[in-house]
Length: 238
Image (tube, rainbow, N blue to C red; front, side, top):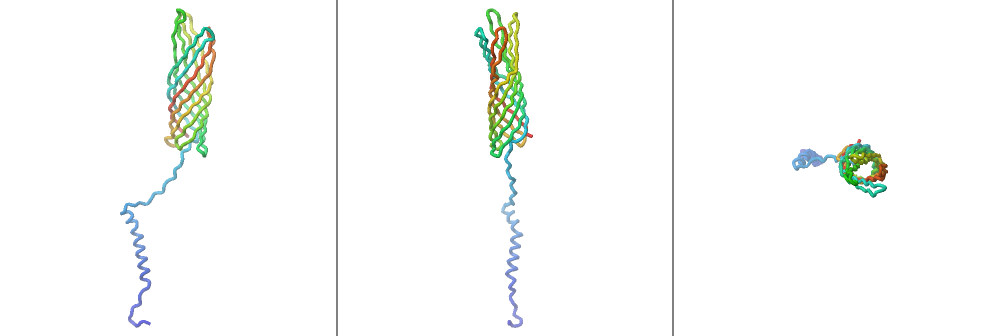
């Protein structure tokens, strides 16, 4: 036994010292981090891929390059009506995107076109004019593409229809006029880009062939009409 008056060492002192130092460091660490310029990292929101699935409507405009060929059954009359004009209209459709990023859809459009070409000629001593005109058209098409997130390159094909007018005017002899609405086919390709969750822009080129139809004038014959169009458009997806 130690003698009376001799102090006994406190064995808990080192433990208490370590606890005090730990508490001091813990309280000082935010201050040190702030002084060193470190900040607590914010949680990163997950990136959600864009989906092309949904209904959409839009408008488009551009240039149309038309070619109409008229050939008479007799007499050897042939004429090409090459014309360039404006085209503009509305479109609507639906897309569905699969898990492998394949996108298929169905789209319809209706357009105003300004295509008109007149040829002036003389038969014998008689002057006359022949005019071909088309002022509206539309189509119903399928679309298939592959989505690179917000980029969608696609192919499109389907049925197309357009009105056509044919006029012959010979002053002093009379005039002849015929019109029809023809159904044909159309095929093309385009690229669409989604600006945000609702709005997208596109560029598209298409070729259309409306076949042949007969004109029953004094000199009957056939008319064949084909065209190529280049369009820019904007769409809103619901």
